[in-house]
Length: 343
Image (cartoon, rainbow, N blue to C red; front, top):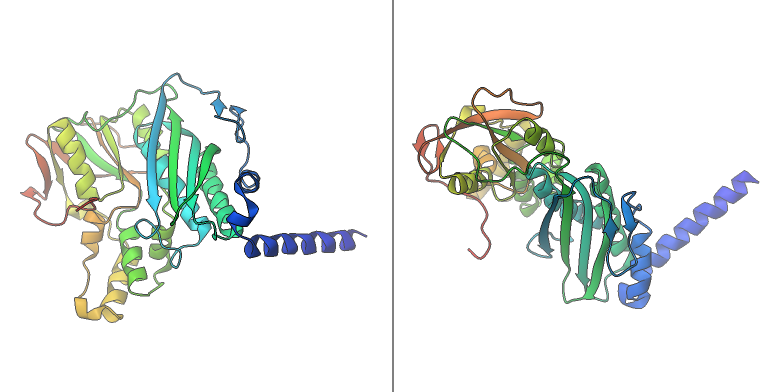
């Protein structure tokens, strides 16, 4: 009998998936889609009121709530022919949760807005919900609400909430001369992955995966705050660009030692693959350029007081000095700074 039951359960699951793939969100309707997406998302233990009401109500562990919001627009931040909906959901959650971690806060919750064409398959939207929930869970957070709307293209808006959990917020403006500059997480992998996808290549797989689904070091943010970090930022636009934000906000100069930056074997392999691949005429890419200006790895950069013991997950890459801007190896940087919208 058990075998028969399992057979019926498998058949029912397959039928459900087939229906989800066959119907569109326009056919299912707004409230049907909300219910189906909510079913993919675990309920937050801290939610007094969760998905399904006018607003969520949360119990929080600190009176200081950290909030950050970001947009993903189809064709600019993701392409459906390059990334599946689970990957896109993970990426949407990660880039917002990383901002919370960069304040030294503990991620708690996500609010998600989705605008999409009515002919979008229901299965795509539900897999997006699974990706959002998966990455939120990796950070210790939950999806607690959101909104749906029709649109001519897919737009995903995510608001991330966190709490300071006893620490003071770590801003961009606290770096001081003689501070240590350090990073947590990999640099350059997402940019390498994007270059590979643009060339129609899928190897090295870890570089492509880093672009599709970045994995910020969430624990490193609160860890740095607890150990006295003087400034911190999420590396979304590129190492040079984002350290430039710290330099400008703090009124200091940040000097990076390139010998301390890790150019992993996969970055070297990606550069070789591109040099031999369809885009070979463009010349061999420089892996160091990906590390310095690539962005979207959502690693963290921070400064620590001189003499501080750099915590686990963090690697020293330079020093803060008197002056302005970002230098490489004691010289003013003249290369590509990183991503800027509207440029």
